[in-house]
Image (cartoon, rainbow, N blue to C red; front, side):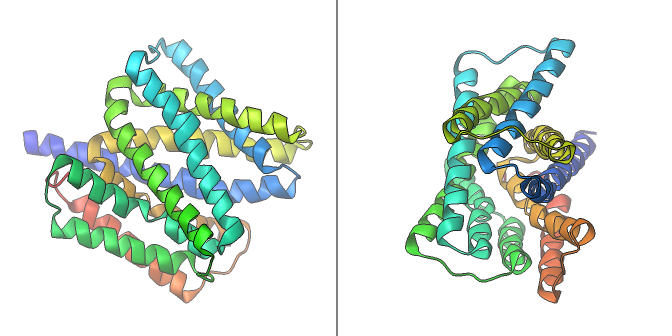
Length: 294
């Protein structure tokens, strides 16, 4: 009976992470639509989090969910104002000094970093299936993102910095979320990030989006690619652990490639298909793995 319960919980966790990856993977598509409608980056990031955070705050009020307090609140504020902002700053700065392919690949070092750091903190060994799945996901991501893999030393440092910050964000979230709850935790993180991005938007003198299409794209980013994606990730991580959740999240570039082909008519190369297949193989291995090794 206990084994069945664990297996059921793990399946729910896998489904939640896949839903999260779908939401995050759709964000570049919404982003391209918003850019085409004249929305600048500070505005996009601000409206992403203020719309999502506001929506979740209303939901919390209706459900009468308690707000985090004490150390949990401080940790979540740090995750939003420092973790998310620092990760995005490093990522978008890296794009100026390295190719898009290399920047994306460096960011997706985070599943390997999370797996290793989590094992060191827990002082546990890593099972071979999980190690194989992590490396397979990394190789698959390298094939899937494609493009030129060149950049300056600064670009590489910034790219690795983005992965490291996101890894710490995930590991902190693994400890705080069970105490605060997935929805309250996500709400505080979104609102904290919104405050920082709002200041950036004000400093940049950004204008409000001017077309219905722009607002629809921002709504898609806020709802599907932020609120749903973050809550689903936290819910899945609570059942799978940070390492497996991070590795399963490498489905994100696969979702982006497929949606870009369907919505933006971008071509898919043979190597990207191979990369997607490798990532899916890693996902299947982790989905069938037991609870041991977290």
